[in-house]
Image (cartoon, rainbow, N blue to C red; front, side, top):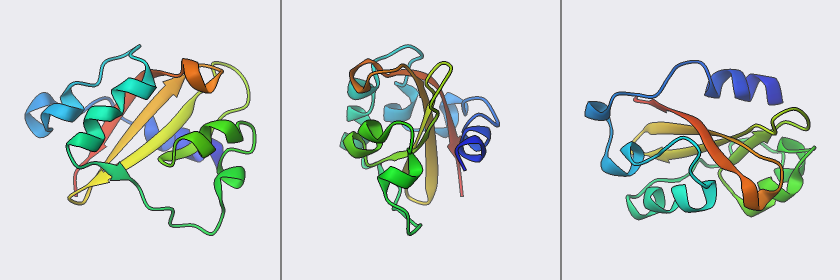
Length: 117
């Protein structure tokens, strides 16, 4: 499940600025995730609903602290660069953000992708 989430999150590069609102366009590589997500909420993006029966412990069995801290967390790897995948929704669009970092306080934006309906 973790590998599938990362494959989906990393499948393509970022959408062009013409296709997105300012909150998404403001996402920058290496920005602290805790602050990078704030403009998304202000612009109406919400954590994707948990459409599965499993809770945060099942999604992030290696790093439950991150899934508990961020409701938009989809999956986290347990080794390597410490990738985590986050998903937001707005008006039928899905925004995937991939972060790197180990402690929950040190997550930084690595990449993002926007899926339009």
